[in-house]
Length: 281
Image 1 (cartoon, rainbow, N blue to C red):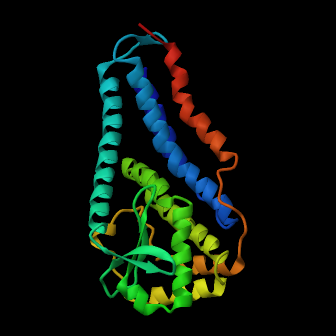
Image 2: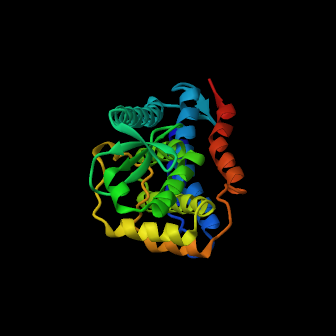
């Protein structure tokens, strides 16, 4: 019976990931649905595995005998989750150690680590309290007005704690990279994250200046620093630049929130634990 529960959770996760993303609509609606479809399947799998582990390998459920196979399968799911989490934490620690070796400089009133490279680059790198990293090439490419727009964009990532939240989302991505549409949903969330940061920046600087800054950076040669290869490093660059610029110029005022989707997520995550009382020795 425990195996059937795990199988049902797996099929539910696949079915959720197969649901199409909304075409068009507001970016607020896109954010809610993409976040739900990205987060819910791995959490359901993890909660189901934990529920099976809590019931153990002995006893019965609805007259069906529990087995070691389902117990070990659940243990494997939880073990894989712990392994990927430790792997990401290790990468984060290594990145931060490399950043600490960079010199510091005040950039538009913000303390930044300076990357001695000619390509333009800016990012918030870290966990809950990330550090701003900018390249020497960025300082040479942009004038003060456009540099202020870039820094305002990066300040938005700090304000929303994007490095922390996208660390968790990056963990879920690694955990379920084999599920359908994982990469598509991940790229959608990355785009919406950057659009949210752009929206925050337009409250500090002229939207046209921010749009010009993005265009300048898009035209410049680019490479990602070795220590910034983590998926939650918040680069200003995006492959879907047109959508970002359109959103900047339109000036959508909707804030990105969970809305009623959070209650659906809570229901789905708690549902596996409903099976526990039906297990008996």
